[in-house]
Length: 107
Image (cartoon, rainbow, N blue to C red; front, top):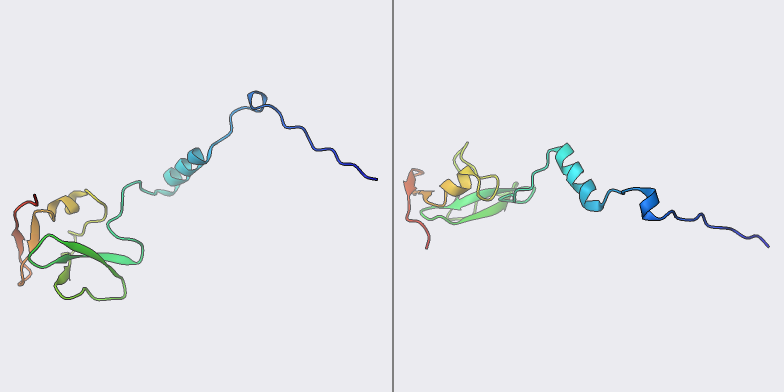
């Protein structure tokens, strides 16, 4: 009969500190340039805005905006929640001619 002995585990005080999952995740995010900001849209989507109002939506990259929605003007596309352009478009929109207009702040 064969017997096996398991190696003994050293107490944590002897083994020293071990990286936790959160530490590893944080390090990975910092090293890869990931952001902790909430994205406006998921991967494979782009943001669109309602014409004449401050509403928005996300559309799959391979689709056109639905009726009543348009793409944001180039260079003025919000990328993350509360970024410069997300804040701007809360009080601005495009009219039916594509002109930027000011709208009243939501209540």
